[in-house]
Image (cartoon, rainbow, N blue to C red; front, side, top):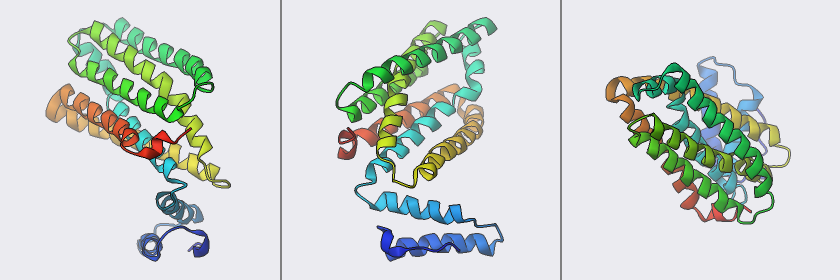
Length: 236
């Protein structure tokens, strides 16, 4: 077990007991329990309990919903575009168009966002635009509307990506930067893995409308997580 300095943790005794029990379960099942696991559990507790740290939890939760939603489509994008009538050339061009537009906008809007106030509201606006883009994909009858949906989503991505990382970097815990970025990248990768598995099951049961419907819900929830908390409006 790792040593826990309870005086430095802003959490209740029951939360610490739960974290310790979780680690004990790993020990009973003979799964190695490294120091980083203890520290990560306690850091997550601290972030949830501390008002000062609450913005990081809002940022992470909204990002996780966003990543999971988009990752539902990416493994099956070529198949979906083909179903709408796209040729192999159009499939690759449409994805190239989306990534090119998103990349250019991340650079341009990142520069602009450094100079604009109300950064929390910029993040919310980006999430809403992404939700609109996914909604267009849901109703897209043909390849032209597919391109429209991808273009709108790219605009939202161009807004969200730089401003999210700026706000997250500002709210990091001193001395915990690597852990918190590890949580960000690690959970993102786990969610991409989970979404890839889920998308195949949903496609088999409900078709692409089921996948796109889940995407709309996940993106809308990401926006609501930000809109629904006053914390996001203080992320400046």
